[in-house]
Image 1 (tube, one colour):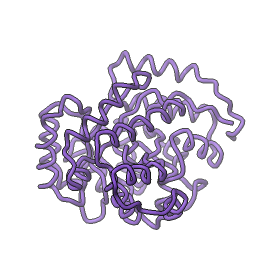
Image 2 (spheres, rainbow, N blue to C red):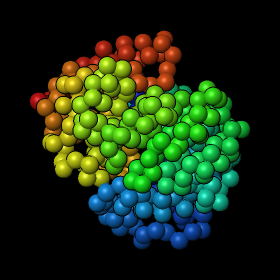
Image 3 (cartoon, rainbow, N blue to C red):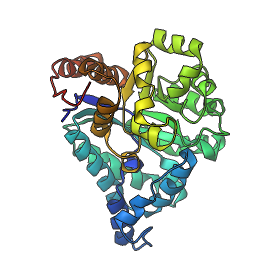
Length: 332
């Protein structure tokens, strides 16, 4: 059994860590209709044809989140599982618009999540508030205004939801606001959308990381730029398979991306929906791709290089990675 290297998880949606049983428990606790009769029945629906088919059930499930206790429990459960997966740094995504549209006060959301973060000092943490592309750029600016009182609790801002029909360039104004306020910027690009969305994210949004980015390989000039500038790409292998971005794990482009010198790292995206947490992703790529323990160490080192850390923090985590000698019996 592979022992996962110490790693930073930089691409994980807190809402995507809600396990089916947790969703049903929250519905019952809040006196709401349950979305399924059992956790098994709910999980059986998690067969997706594309990103939108996933998002439809993902957003529907989130109506059960009503109280600070719910958001605390969600974050607490993830951080416990992350520590078991040898995650040393977690920069977690939150979709505040989802919850405010469901009638939940933003203070309830932020208070519950940050309280759980404070209760897990064993994992270095940060919170990134993402804007939902499908709601449009004006809604993103309005959401940012709501977030302003909580800026001191945020590490940065991001951009997620469907790429189709919602180019990243439209969100330049809200990203400029966040940059002026000293927040880090990241964006989903190059998953459902093509290389142009990656380029716009860099040139127009000023992002410091690209979330996903696997379709950058369609543009050789972009690949050269990403490699030369060491732009981090937070790749989510099991997500890519489940959402049909790639046909199966054995055909995932991760080895090619490493060979091209791209600053790729491995993450779980929405682990409750896609088959596993970050350690499960490491095991999957170690089993199904031609990767050596040296490759896994590089992926882990890249994750800390990409994290929003001080140089001293980054060096300390890198020392842990360099010392990693986990079992490689499941690698080729």
